[in-house]
Structure formats: structure tokens, C-alpha cells
Image (cartoon, rainbow, N blue to C red; front, side, top):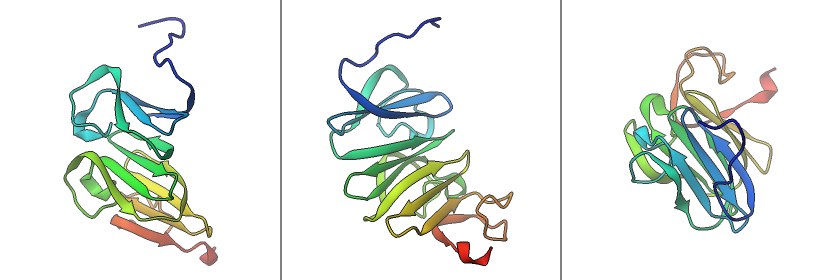
Length: 159
């Protein structure tokens, strides 16, 4: 524990994200690094917990979002990748198991990403919004409480 900031990476960082007990750093060269607890594969590396940054992807990363047990990675080509616990469909690739390495779930066209505790949202260059994961409280805005293990379009015209 520290009471003041400490430098952890000796290179230009352009972004990052935090999960429940892990963190990501996005470097200027497009590489993605993670550290902290790796339970369920949420850090995107096939390693144990670590307090030293480990490389997740070597290049091409635009943004990252972390949650309690899953993460999303947006690449510069607009592709979307997920890692971590597939429980309740929250990784969006149709499986319920844990993914310790990133899995591509969308080929391209993704403009932005966000994660909740048990669900995720992304939007496309055309403004379409997609949701997946647990929806037990209606957090998808679909008028149901059914969860989806693959991305589903959110129809904003109904409101």
C-alpha cells in the first residue's frame, strides 16, 4: 500500500482501465499491459496474479474496459475482443467458460466500449448499440430481463 503515486511503466501511456482487482495500461505504441489478480482470465494473459505489468497485446489497441471478472479490448481496426469469465454470457462470444486470452467477438466497425459488472455495451461507427451478458435487472433497455451470450442490437427508436 502506498499513500502517493508510484511510476509503474517507463513509457508513454495513452489510456487505461481498472477492474475489481486488476488494471490495464494502454501505451502510445498501441500495446496493452495488465497487472493484478487474473482470476477467470479477466486480465487477458495466461499467467497467475502479478504485481508487475504483463503484455496482453503487442500493438493495435485503441481502448480497453475492465469489470469485475471480464474485459473488452477495442483494436484500431474496429474489431472487438473479450476475455475473462463467460458466466452469464458477459464475454459475448457465445460460450460460458473462462477465456484466459482475448477472443475476437466482432470483426470491425466498433467505435466505443463499456463494461458493467455482469454485462457489456458497444456502439458502432453508424451509431448502433449492442448489449450482451446478464440482464436480470433490465440493464439492456430491451424491456426484458433475459440475458444474451452474444451481442444483441438495442433499438433506441422504441423510446
